[in-house]
Length: 80
Image (cartoon, rainbow, N blue to C red; front, top):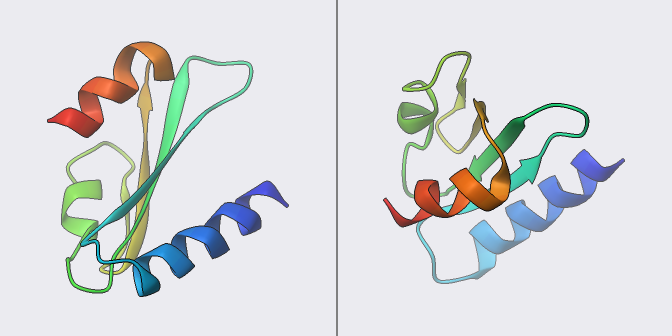
């Protein structure tokens, strides 16, 4: 599935690139929402996810969903 494909890519990137956090943003089809998935081997990303309604997961892998369109909201989310 698409979810499994990007999960594997994110896991690979988190383990092999010199980055603290890997974030994947996906616009939900048929509704105005953005699914955000995060991976890290060094940072407890679940703390960030839990700041959003319905967000959560594990310290190394988590996610949340926000309302909006990727073109409008995604850039603001990543740049903050």
